[in-house]
Length: 318
Image (cartoon, rainbow, N blue to C red; front, side):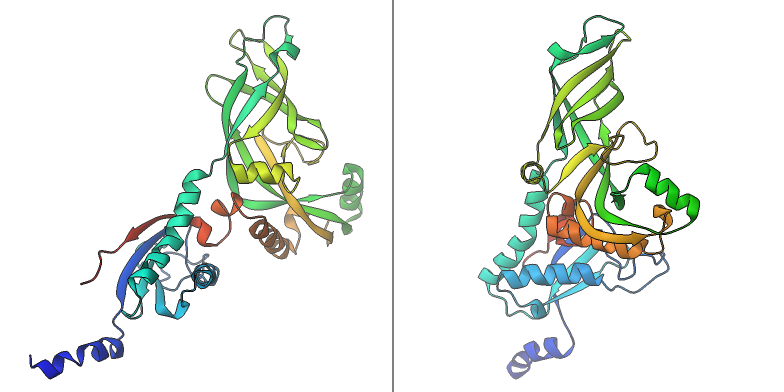
């Protein structure tokens, strides 16, 4: 090849749309442009919410979003390939780009949905009478379920009356995230209730002891995640057993928790709340509330850069 042709190579790369592989981003859920589409959906577009979240993070670091291209993997709909549009990014800019994603995965690893149940065994009530035979503290964990629920601040009687009369009902609505409490073996959960209506960190837990008795013990809850602890202390978030009067549910599993993330104001709903025609609209309001609340919830729900699980960096180009 003659030397003058070598000078034309950078221009040819631009004209032919040549891009440099920079990173492969692995997300917890599908990043499809249309999440409801099946495997036959063959485009490689990325959902707009993920794109905007990535672009916003790049802009915050002074990086030009136009310098990158995002493309969903054709075989794995949880994977985004990030490519550089040109080769003009400096080593310092490449380092900042890499750090944008590494900060998310490092924060995710530091986050935890583990909790410690501190038992006041001196106050335990055992049936039949005897020793509670329980440890002073129990390490447990919560696992989020993927959809939001709604809490309508109306009495059970009002709600039933609305159902009987087939009419709408109006009232303040809060968003809740359902979580399941996982206890270590061989402990068996019998019941869990809130001890104080204004303090979701205290409660009464009933456990089946090794001897076959049931011990009802006051407890205090400590969460490992510092962000969740802060939100709990600020009363921005409260975690109630779903059997609590606060959540006013139908019968629920013993291990179910309602993590309340705040109000979306007064809403007019149909009496059959799970089948409300505005369900999608209300879910989106709750999603916005959750995104504003931030971590650790954005690690587990929604569509944002926080759903990033791991990053593979491409080998440096030569």
